[in-house]
Length: 482
Image 1 (cartoon, rainbow, N blue to C red):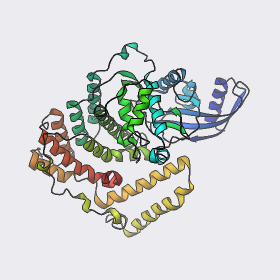
Image 2 (spheres, one colour):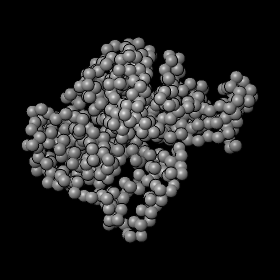
Image 3 (cartoon, rainbow, N blue to C red):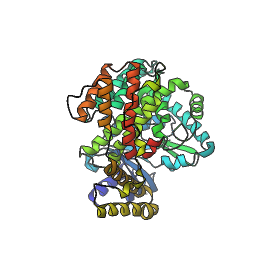
């Protein structure tokens, strides 16, 4: 036992009023991009908790998001939810003493079940999980019924909160190195067509498949409350129903089932039911929010503060999220799509990626062969033999190898082609040869309203979609095929 384990064991013994606590095993749990979660198998001697115990230690990752709550704040939220009967892991103790682990952490009871989104989605065929989806809706309504710390926040929601959120996303995007024209386009549409608010509640703000512990067909716990706080009730519903959280499943509600079942459960639990048109705008806002967070996650890796493969891959989700936004935002009824300009290189489908591994012109023959055999061995021999975190990590490595190969084969973006079309057909200035400068000029024009004319705005949709498709064919081929 090292000094850190000894200090932790002593602290756990003190908190549990035990004679002794022995940590028999510990392992990192998956899904900890923002927080670090570790499962502790312990033996407790003496006290009311004597015997074998399984606890989860939750602490900050090395580069936490600024918008994430502290562990002390999250622990208070767990206690609040637990006291009011919401299904959460039982919070046990909070440690503020950094002498134990070097950082604050919380301990909660381990909850049996599975949270893997793809495992859940795989069971959702033929409406098999509709009862679970309805139960999830009812549980979200119970969360929204929790008392807010500030009773004044119980007032009816108003559009000012949506405006504040949009301004926040715009400011966060501006702090990143690379301009994002598609996200600026979506932000502008939402500013002109804001979601209709309902009421301010204690929102989970990350209620989705992957943060739900399910045992069989029963919800056991809602996990990961680090983003919880006052928000509009419909924000949580839009987040759960956004395409990005369906994990390849056909069910519009988290990939698990129908929105109708989810809303039925939410209404049964005492929540207000939004109509579909109203909900669709909250789904668009949720998709934009995740795109901003995904870019920030990638920036944490790029900064060198927290080098992490999962964070590095998160930024590669952006093209798929852009395509979702471009698809979800409705076309202006006053515009005839047939009249919209398109790039001369619009048919990116002509590129066949099936032979990408054999045609990597920038790598020599031996390197290509080595990369291919490494990837094939990983997929056919290594990954099937792994379980849990090791399997998850190996799948990420295989995914990263695929992205590297496609990127070497056909480049990253057709932004140059799109940029020329924008210049020729939409009068975008091109004084600077830098693609970033052109993208930033477009972002500025979108934010200022210079592209608000319906035909100009819809022309941007088509041109930006071509660039998003080109990048999606590298990092997210499935998204490019939808």
